[in-house]
Length: 321
Image 1 (cartoon, rainbow, N blue to C red):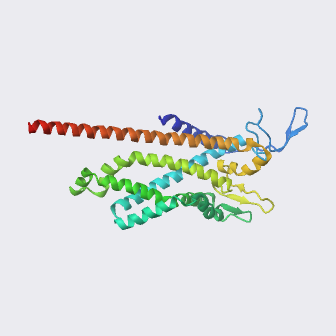
Image 2 (image 1 turned 90 degrees about the vertical axis):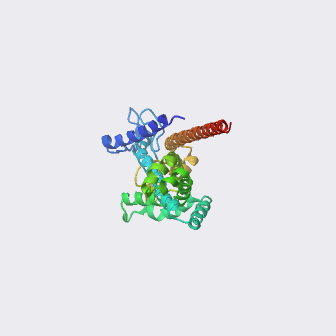
Image 3 (image 1 turned 180 degrees about the vertical axis):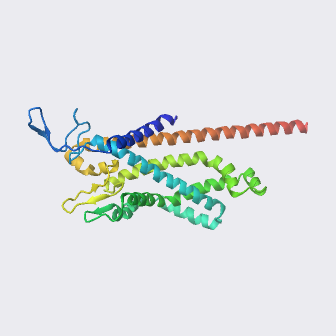
C-alpha cells in the first residue's frame, strides 16, 4: 500500500488548520439568532447545516466548520507528540533493556508489559487526568502549556512498559546476529553498534509501531472526549453540568454525543467524527504500508538465504567430486 496519499491527506489537514490560525487567528463566529430576508426569526442555536452555515452550529451558536479548522491541528499535533514520546521513550529504554539489564530484570519488565495489555488504560487515564484537566471558574492553577505537557506525559508513560518490552526484545534479537557480535568483539562501541547494526534492522519496525500508536491515541482521545476529558482541559461552571473545553479540539466536540443521540441533532458530531475516521484510516494505511514493506523485505531476505545455501551446497558437491 502506497503511504504517500494518506500522508499527504494528514499533512494537508494539519496545514489548513495552521494556515487558519495565521490568517484568521483561530476566530470562530457565533450566531445567536438567524433571520430571513424580511427580518423574521427563523432559527436559534443549534442551527442545522445550510448554505450560509456549512455544518451548522453547536448549542452555543459557534460554527462547527470553524471549530474543525481550529481544532484539527491540536488533535493531530497532540496525537503525533504522544505517539512519538511512546516510541522514542521505548527506544531509549529499549537500549537500557537490551544492553544493560540481566535476564531477571527483563522478565520483570515483560511481565509488567503483559499485564498492562489487560488493564483498561482509558479508565486509568481518566482517573489520572480528571483532577488536572478539570478547571474551576475560581481560577486557573496551571497554564495551557503545562496541562498539554502533563496530559501528553501521562498518556505516554502508562504505555512505556509495553513499548520498552517490545522494542527491547527487537534489539535483543538483533544483537544475537553473528555480525553484530563480531562487531562488538572487534572493538565497536555501543553507539557504533546501535547506529550501524541495530537501527538498520529495527528502523522500519519503529515507524510501524509509531503509526500503530498514532491510531491508538486517536481512539483513546475519542473515548476520553465522551468521558469529558479534553485536550488542554475544560472549565467547570457552577450553574452548568456540562464542561466547556478550553480550546477547540475534535474530542471536545464529540463530548456532547449523549445529548445528540437524545435530540437527533446528528450534525453536531458527524463532522468531527468524520475527521477522526479519516485520520484513523490514513494512519492505518500508513501502518499497513510499513507492514507490507516489512513482509517484502522478509521474503527477499529468505530468498537471499536460500540462494546462498543453494550456492554453498552446490560448491560443496563440486569439491567433493
